[in-house]
Image (spheres, one colour):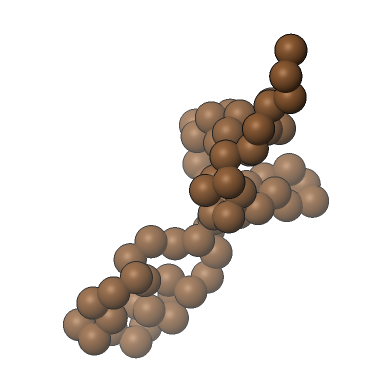
Length: 65
């Protein structure tokens, strides 16, 4: 059986924390930033966590399951 390959796109987008949770970047910061309020942009800079329902799927593409 060959080794599982990590999906590189997923590896660039998600990081595993020390406690085993998955960190992710928030969406909506790619473009059209002039119409967004400063408060909204500031809050979008923070990282979020992946929902529990999606964790198993994302861990699989990261080669951790």
